[in-house]
Image 1 (cartoon, helix red, strand yellow):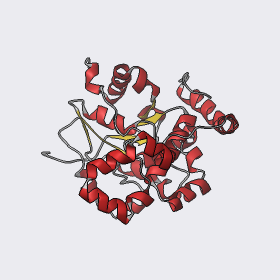
Image 2 (spheres, helix red, strand yellow):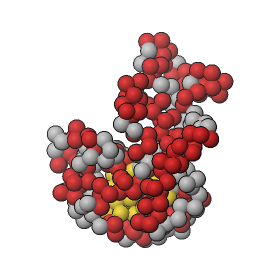
Image 3 (tube, rainbow, N blue to C red):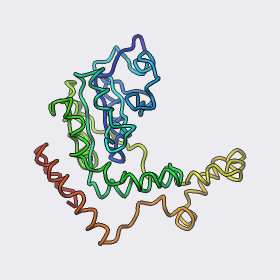
Length: 276
């Protein structure tokens, strides 16, 4: 990089909606540079000691659009993330934001599987107490924290279904929002990042002496063995997305329905593929 500067784009979430893939798709555009470290979380409370120069060093000032993707910014229900919109506005009030959303019940299922893989039992217990699994998927509620400081025109809400069914059209809609040229080659985006199943072992296994010793000796076979369908189903079934009973689906639909209705009114989008 020849120079550094502040970002003018942030993907603010939501968790388990495809932000890792979107981050990489954006980075494929010649006029866009996305941070090498996807989730910088500069505007989160525990990073308040990070210097501005440290933050600016993540971005290539020679590019028209410079961005990062920190899905924790749209978790207003958790105190450590609550002031992120205020902090963002104080530093970069004119930036544009992308908020990626998906069927909230499917997002909920992916969130639980992600926590099985990535979090300790204590962290999972905190998620239960804070209603984190549900509230992260209350998209209209999360947007309100940003709309206190930014007009809706600076936030593009994108249904992640479009990244599955018509990736090129969806990305060109995003590029138009960002003021950069459209692209014509769909093969540019012919991949996905951070799919469920890339890692399946919970922290208690990865941290054990036996696993660490085996991984040092033969990392490839150990990883392959952990992902083998028979072993995964028998010992690490929590790494699969949860199968919800109809009663649980109905309960979740009741929780999400008012927020989804408000999101439809706010954005004018129908989200036809959702279960709610």
